[in-house]
Length: 124
Image (cartoon, rainbow, N blue to C red; front, side, top):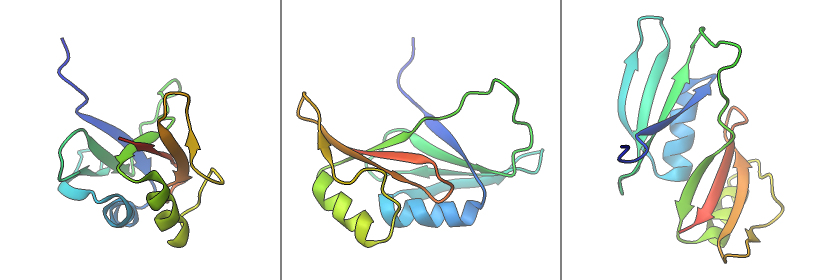
C-alpha cells in the first residue's frame, strides 16, 4: 500500500540554473545535493509546507528507449491570477494566454521551466 508521492524527477541541462529558477519562482528550497556514481548531479527541492519533493537531474547518460517522460509538474497555489501575473512579469514563458477555469471550479495555467519542462499552476 502506498502512502503518498515521494518525489518527481525532471532532467535538466544546468542544475544550478534550475535550482535557482525553482527556488525563486516556486518557493522551493534545496533539501540535498549529491553526485551519483555515474557522474550525474542531483538535487532534491522541497516546499516549506511539505509534500512531495522535486528531484532535478543533470548529466544522466543512461536514458533508455521506453523510459517514460514527465508530462508536467503541477504546483498548488492560493492565487492563480496573481501567480500568472507574477510569472508573466518575470519573463517566464507562459503556455496559456490566461488562467482557465475548469467545470469543477479549479483554476489553472501552464508555463515552461528553464529546460522547456511543462509546469502547471493549479488552485488549491
